[in-house]
Length: 72
Image 1: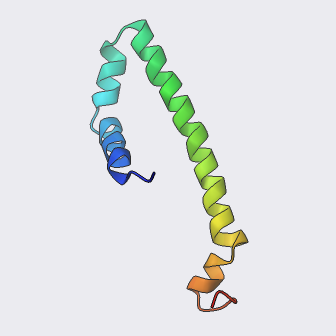
Image 2: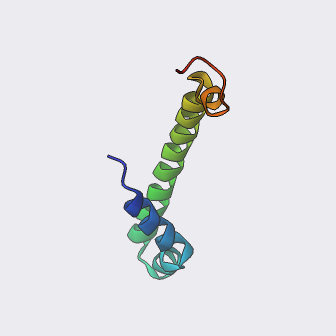
């Protein structure tokens, strides 16, 4: 399910100016779609942040990476 290439394409779409161009030159419907997409992306990013924190700190991964803990 992890698709790094999709995230990299999305990153390029945003940083290259393509998204801004589409927003600036798009119809009202296209601009709405872009804003709706970004809102959903921010929601997903918030979930990813929470999940990463749980994986790293709550599961003891940080301790295991540091050589401590009982992950042996």
